[in-house]
Amino acid sequence: MHPYLEQILTTQTVLTPEGSRVAINSQITRQEGLFLQDLLREIRPRVSLEIGVAFGISSMFICEVLMELGAARHICIDSGPLRRESGELDRYGLGLLNLERCGYGALVEAYALPSEIALPALLQQGRKIDFVFIDGWHTFDHCLLDFFYANRLLNVGGAVVFHDADGPPVKKVIRYASRYPSYRRLGETRRPRLPSAGRRNGVRKIGGFALDLLRLLRPNPPTCVALRKVAEDERSWSWYEKF
Image 1: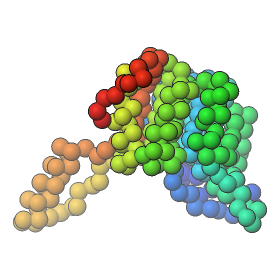
Image 2 (image 1 turned 90 degrees about the horizontal axis):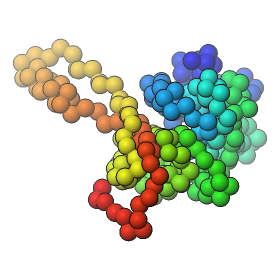
Image 3 (image 1 turned 180 degrees about the horizontal axis):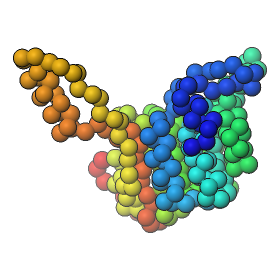
Image 4 (image 1 turned 135 degrees about the vertical axis):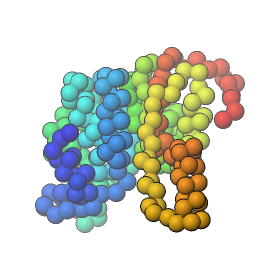
């Protein structure tokens, strides 16, 4: 892992150009980042796409492997802004700066636009993608729109990964996308199990044991879900399956 990314994950802060520290938020976890890296090494994309960049934590995990593989391009889409009214870098601006600091700048093609504007433009240009990470606006309609365009852009053999898959809107989009005949579930990450409450006595001990058993029988929901495109999307105009 790049030393600067390790420093960010350890301190939970990023450095501004002036040298002050800003607390990060909305980032993926170390576990999720390593999951993305394993997928990338399996798929070996030439071009990848990320929707929702923020401070660039996921971007740094992705670009580290893309550099290793000799990939051509990582397309970053985030509504921004890059700078605040004061002129200071906003979090997307800091995210792009973090990628530069790690030496990934030549890989990055950045758009400070809403995904509903940037994605159709990429499609119109005839662009093709091998890996898509969806972590943008998480309403059902917006996430579904992101997947709609990801599917149109994605090469067969490529993969799309949904972050925050445990949220009801994203979960519902994944259920729908999983019904596509051209997609297969590739992998997922889950939150670590919470430790038990510790020592208990009497009724509390019995109740605690029952809760621990319930946790084992009902695993935590996935936070990242990956689907692989195994064939061209050839659904008819009237295709539908319940989801």
